[in-house]
Amino acid sequence: MTRPLGHFTIADGRPRIAVLADVVHLSGTTGYFGILDGHGGAECSEWCAKRLHETLQTIGVPPNDAAAKKMVLDIDQAFLDTSLPSGSTAAMCIVRTPKDGAKCQLHVINAGDSRVLLSRADGTIVNGGGTDGGLTTDHKPNHPSERERIEKNGGTVQEAAGGVHRVNGDLAVSRGFGDANYKKTGGPRLEDRPVTADPEMGHFECDWTDFVMIVCDGVSEGSFPNAEVCRLAARLLQETGGDAAKACEAVCMRAVETGSKDNISCMIVLMGAAESTGPIALGKRCEFHPGSLLGSDNSSFVKAYVAMCELGGVSFSEAAEMRYELLLARSEAGQAEEEDHAELGLIGNPVGTKGSDQRKAWFDEWATKCQERGNSESQADEEGEGNPGDAMEQLAMMKMLLGMMQAQGQGPGAAGGGSRN
View 1 (cartoon, one colour):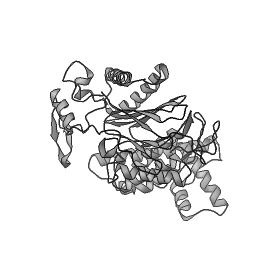
View 2 (cartoon, rainbow, N blue to C red):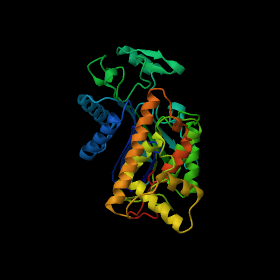
View 3 (cartoon, rainbow, N blue to C red):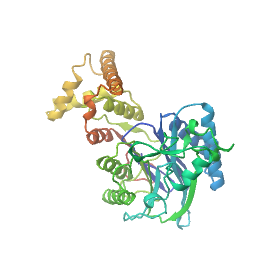
View 4 (tube, helix red, strand yellow):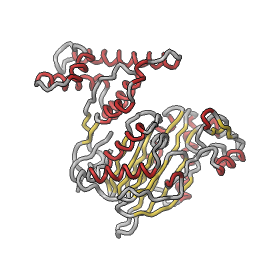
């Protein structure tokens, strides 16, 4: 999504929908941005992102380290009090852009293994002293200071299969929201537990032409170093005239191409408004463009497609009917391609006239059958029976889904349009 308020343009790309949540709060020339990457379920990332939004709206952006730490730990305690399962990392950054044109100030707040990166306009990464030159250091159990802290507070660090070090032999990250089972030993404070949401913080400054990237660990899971992430994003920004959404998409695609199989999310924050593909105002509506339904016999595809429908504010059955009408119009105009005919064949022959209750009921039943078949395949896969549909090329599926949503409209002072994927 691209959202300009004050001096900022923000874009994020999230081709895989799982347990990811984002935080974007803007107030004048100050913005609070973050990505929460959940594990063990979506409860923690979704709940904490919502509470962060509410807290920032109520008390404003934390002015210093102490206030930021208190906010994060208070939210963590509130989530733990719900007894909901799961956990979530959080990579966040406060950006302050002074009105006098001086350098922008960055306040980085990190708990987990997602990353905050800073890049020059030419794609040169600004080495912040963190993991792989980032502004943040991954909170992994085998990091010397993390291991010492974990063991001091009653936890253990064990090397598991694949050489991955885990807290108490299970959790592969040592800081974040939630994860109540790993916060039962240690001192009375939340900071003094084997796993803690206590964030590490850093302060940096940057030029107006620089840009900030926040990425979850799925971006770097394969062979995709931070420096290459910055170079790719900068190249796309230059080629598209500042379209940060396109740059995010390219980063997510490259992550899959280089071997990532994890959740993937990328957010780019530009200090100034994009020049040619300008942003849209927060609050403008999104127009949903239904993507290809080829692959709706695959459980992973259906799950991702349904999630994209939810983001677009339509049901799966409504999207399928919209797609059918689009394909039918192409066919009647003699513009259908071979894949269009295959897709029409997959959908079948709807009954009733366009817009009728009978047509709606037919697509409701069609969508339900697709989802039920997907659920059956998922269960069979979990039971070890295999799922031949899972051989579907992940990158091809992502490319189809990425084109499904496009934001329309212009905000005050903005030129052109942006996109949310």
